[in-house]
Length: 292
Image (tube, rainbow, N blue to C red; front, side, top):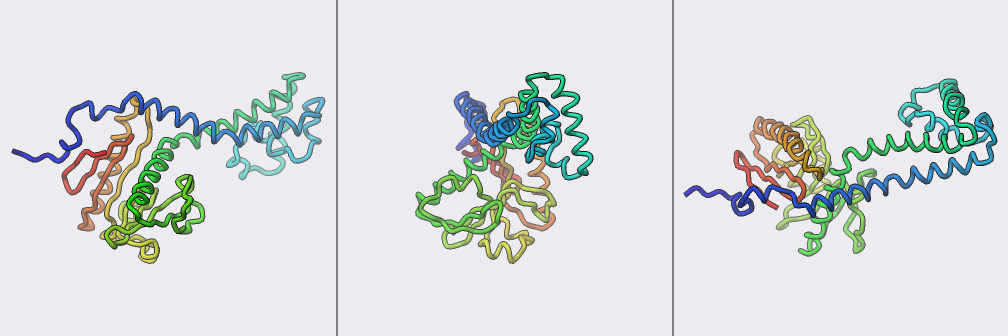
């Protein structure tokens, strides 16, 4: 009789299907995060509306101080685009906004201005939301790992995503997953460090998750070039739409194959895993196992 470890977790095709409750919770979480991220844009729009409230005609906007950035946004120019424009180009864009869109709006030109401002900001929000499923999945996984460490009485350190500084564990760890890039702890006296979104030199691509057998200090000193310092590498997919499940797997499998081939050339076989919506696929060598 052939022993198949994955049968400990995968007994039927139903185990591969995300439940309605999980899908619903996922979409609600995405909606809440979108609203959270849109809050600054709404506040900016209100500030712009207040700043131009005394204007009697669109041309009066040119005389109001400190609203140029808002006018340029309403003209459809992103922050990236503004870096490449000269002052005369910006002035031309604002005058084009006034002539072509605000003046035809008549008495409602302020509403038109605010609506167009929000349209451009909404486009920026849409861009940041494209990978929000992965961001939420990373936060959820991070919280699960931290909770497991705390319950086990294991101390940890975490790396801030912007400053890249390592911070010691504190009693109040609420919401650190919002700005966390890495975690470090000890397992049976041996160092373990998990880094998110890291470009692996051997693979020459970004990998969602890398687990090392080094401390943060050792990791920095070795510049993560040693193949044997990698314990596991994996892809993390947080999209909840059932229609995209197959595409998630195709993308992840291509990435995992690149990892496996690169480390094979270095004569090292780390664990390779794929996490999607709370389910895991774990591979060591040529064997895949299903887990949760």
